[in-house]
Image 1 (tube, rainbow, N blue to C red):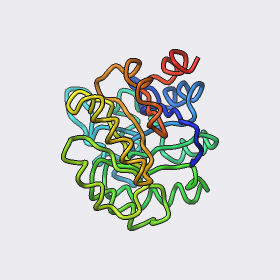
Image 2 (spheres, helix red, strand yellow; image 1 turned 30 degrees about the vertical axis):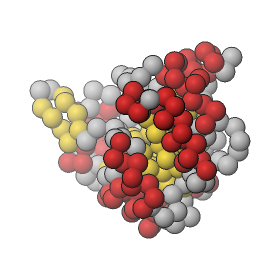
Image 3 (cartoon, rainbow, N blue to C red; image 1 turned 90 degrees about the vertical axis):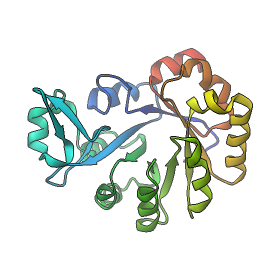
Image 4 (tube, helix red, strand yellow; image 1 turned 120 degrees about the horizontal axis):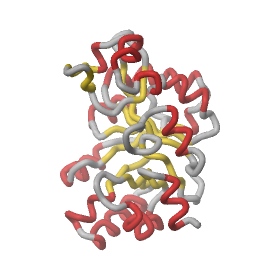
Length: 233
């Protein structure tokens, strides 16, 4: 994980209709070094890979945390394709993982699952929620914990975290601070000993990742195949 190589991670596997599903993870790993996935907890305590707090089906909104795994499988339009975190860890053991934790109550069971799989040294745990980041750092001081920036004000929270491993910066920041200011920020983070993970929200990653990869440790790509073929050759 501390290699000089810039890793490519599939953003939710491959971002889009099948994101956070087994097919997306398998497709991503044909081209990427690892996968980024979101973690939530079902009502019956099962860790699953799902970004949003719920989903719409049959005209109703279904919060993930109020469903059992069986109900999720039955109600979700892609229910059969959404894996448990245990399935992800066991099927893709050779991959590098970035688990984006979406709720505090998922912290402890997720740490247990990764530790029991023997994959702590291959997993970065991250969140945009400062409470979750603090919980991760407290529960596992030796784990690789990252903080995801989702707004300009979040930058000022970085020095408050003790033992932070990485900062996950959106490429979109270039649109509101400018290219050169973003470069300065990323270089400053690296000088502090923090790893820089770049991810994309709404920008054209094929335009910006080639211009920023040299100051990053990892690229969390929406489409690893396209990125790899376009500028890695």
